[in-house]
Amino acid sequence: MSLPPFPVRLIAARPLTPTVRELVFERVDGAPVVYEAGQWISLDIPQPSGTVVRRAYSIASAPGCAIPGDDARVPHRFELAVTHVEGGPGSTALHAMAVGTVLDAIGPQGFFVRREQHPSLFVATGSGLTPLRSMVRDALARGERSPMHVLCGVRTPEERLYAEEFEALAATLPHFRATYTLSRGADDWAGPRGYVQTHVRALYEELAADPAREAPHVYICGLQKMVSAVRDVLRKEMDLPRQVVHSERYD
Image 1: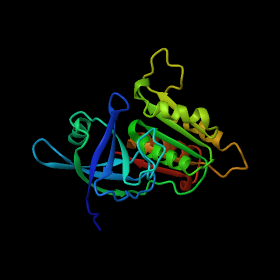
Image 2: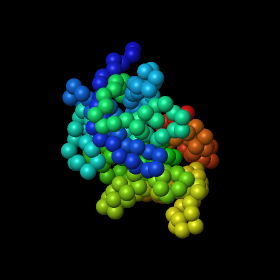
Image 3: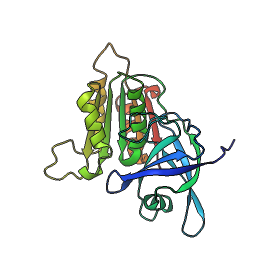
Image 4: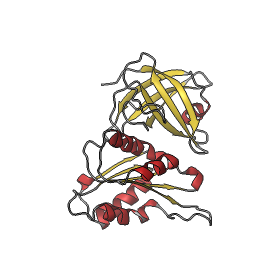
């Protein structure tokens, strides 16, 4: 059954990295946008030619979450983090879109969700971090105390999506950590290097070290090549059951 579209208005936007723009939308009619952390929403995006393209984007905010910096929950708003793809009609239009623009949204939808409290390793590359950020923010807003560790792979330090936000959370919450690993880090980069799959085993085993806790779950989001590589480490090399490995790919 197809879902009916509803109008949304762009109420705020800001750059998060040189290629990623955050967009905050709200329903024009004030009705709540009902979704689970990790789901995605489609937008009908007008083009200069007069046509419309439909594109799906993972929601970056927790359900009912307001603009960053505002602790209140606003059920009719949601946030996206859109990477500009060279020549991509959807992302190009969204990166140029003016605040106040109204367009149609469809959804939310998707099965990549986190419905239980358990130790969690979140693995992403680039804007694959957006649904995982939604899961983290939702868990923290509900007061969850399960250990959570975010692992994100990027090319350069400037591309570390949500780095300041996650660093601030890690500084105050002992059960939350975030690690960024760089594939093209400069000589002065002191953090981890290499692809995310090279760090997955150690971080998972760290989460699993406490025998009093249940087995950690892993949530993976990004391009197919990375998702497959991480799943191979977890399922084939580490022999983890499929029930604890969850993934979604963008391509």
